[in-house]
Length: 421
Ligand code: KE4
Image (tube, rainbow, N blue to C red; front, side):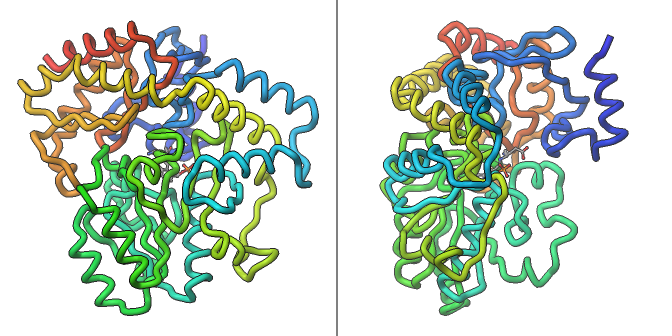
């Protein structure tokens, strides 16, 4: 009988760490990962026969829950026409038109195959457009495994205690200025110290890879003003928040328009998709019209486009953001009392939430790192034993889907209270 344990032993023989992405290895919470047999709606079933209420949602894409019928049907229909063409296909045009219609700052967009490719392309494009080299990012923000951005990163890089990854030439890291999030004075100073040299400022408008914390009042607005003043490209990494916190993402919610936006996760309906877009004046610098090269064999893949279109259209049809906010508020209310008693910090925006094991306040990486990660690990495993699957790290964010029922939310709150005893 195949078990998660036997599969993981085999995996470790042929896959580094036994996983294809580090955070899945449970290093932040101890123990070994389980293997999934199948998933539907708010549920995962492990190959060991366990049923779990899932709050990882494949790290964001499963906003309608797992295997929504509209997405499965779209994948099957598209696959019958062919898996990949390397030739323009109609789905690419429909996806570009939908994304530009929904995301306020996007005049043009290009499809890629991951969030990492999206942010990497934004950086190169900003440097090509401005003919400058320096990049400003914020500690704790994670933008995928891009060489110039894996500097004081969040997510797995943080959990594994190697914020500055091996293999990154100092000359790359040297071009990246890392500042504390929510501190506009340090940004102002960085511009003064690098006059006319900053190509871009990149950030998660709502950082969710060091746990979840929110931009302080006017922080995003002041960043926007500084970038405009210095002719620097403002890049919002909305790989996580795009189509999640609002139809138009965080830029719609906060009313701040970046020059470029990186997208991913939800737009693939579970298939590998990323995208980046923004002002036409900048996007038109891309090959074949412009001098900034960027390419991809599977970019705009028809099956991935069909899946993403089906997911986004369904999300719009049901106004998913309204029910996601209601579910998130219901969960927050149901656990509010125990959080106060135990002096824990619960952050939520729409259907994204994080429970920090610290009294708080949490507003940047340093304050997030005051969390008691051992207490988090104990909480994580107590929840898992009781059928709840949260992200296996204090420095990640949980996701509610439209498939999570009121019953799921009530069960979740009950189990969380038990696990916190
Ligand atoms: P991908 O290359 O993993 O598709 O996207 C990278 C990325 C970029 N920007 C933001 C804001 C992101 O959150 C991510 C990826 N998020 C992590 C979860 N924190 C993906 C999970 C993983 O690395 O396995």
